[in-house]
Image 1: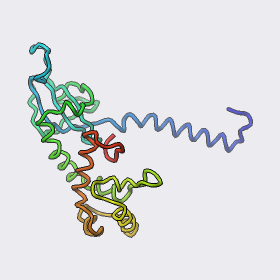
Image 2: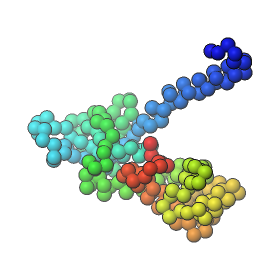
Image 3: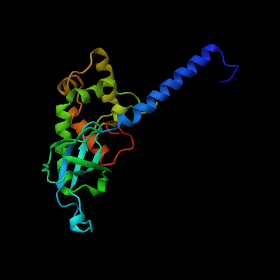
Length: 211
């Protein structure tokens, strides 16, 4: 360390180093999915896969429950899988999933998976309402000219300022509370679902809900 640094400077640098170390340790786990929701199950693998049938693996297309990550999974042999089923994909003992192939490219989504996606996201948002209502309570500016609230479909600057004003008076409790207290705001649950779907499908530069 530079000998000209004062004692206070050294302490600040040390705190910064500890903070960065903590971020490095936390970053990978922050994006890790523990549970997946099944979008489609292909017991015979992909039809376009030219691998000999006796060497093909069954495939599960799934959506990560925490970070909305599209995933390609290989189930254990002889295990039944159904759409919308919740499967454990963490580091512990897995009952149904043998291994994770990796992230699933959007262009590999089957027709069934695409059709299920909206229903699955809607169900996830409804079951974890508090998590998504909190976005309206805590969302911050992305730049000096753009606020993250404005990135929601159908939500402009007028809505954004109204949300900020109202939430300072009292935090929103649920979607219905948001709808009632912010005049002429599009259905808050629907705009959250629409935004998440758009992010999953790779249509958005800025990510509000997925990693």
